[in-house]
Length: 412
Image (cartoon, rainbow, N blue to C red; front, side):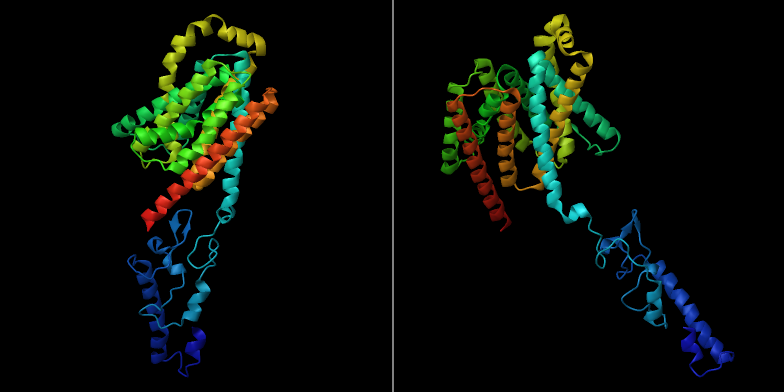
């Protein structure tokens, strides 16, 4: 600014020179004050509503940013004002927030969620079966699963990770049937796990899509395409083959797994009626806590007297107090975390990807359980299990494609 005034050919100490010197300074200060105190300026780059940058939750001051057009009363050239513009440390492009590493490569997060989902599910099934080998009380263990999960949710809410979503009476009424079906399905699954081999229980649970399709067709009145029904034929055939020659077969394990399938089918039906804007983490937390109250009474009535008489003492005598308590704690943590990760994964991927991932998870669980526990299976059981899993994969693929076509039709 000084070089421009001194080279103008006017005596800077003359009266006219002083006027020329003071006027731009006064006007520049005035324009800065105006631009600072005018929050309604539509050209302010720092305006949050216009995509302005945020630093620790605070809006950048507009006086520190270069405006695209000159101030209304300023006679100073824009080249001097550019020197006051700070370098934006958190943007890759003008007005855009810096993209973090995980945001830049989201497939790494999705891959990690899939890995942890599989890993925790396999660990849960193995540890769960090991507990039943020395503590065969599935009703009490089911309570432990949900109880540890409920405590985990309460602690998470207490520290604000995540922030607890409010719950009103109407939402509670909608979630109670969902939680009741979740509790029944969970308990009967554990009864089956305790009675037969883990691989056989998961083979029976492969029939769940068949019950889902039946409920949709005959209860909800939603027509099921013939291609979906045909894809379920290998599932029924495979489970039948595996059941006929399963070495660990007993009716308690078989019927319990079938009841679990029916329970989870009704859970899906009630879940559709209880659609809410609540995020998946909070929703699953509430379902876990409510389901816990449904599981406590039958555990007390069915297994309570036996547990007090000899159940706890026998288990402690076999493995010790520390291992007994730690096994129960960790199996509860693995159960809650793998279910939560499954829900979080579903939010990040398409239904088809999640369906295929769910089928592969069952294959992993069956395979690892056979290796870890050394379960002997007949050739027919192995073939039947393979056919059932292939049928579930085909059904999941066709169903996901149909749902995707429906969404595209609605969007169009």
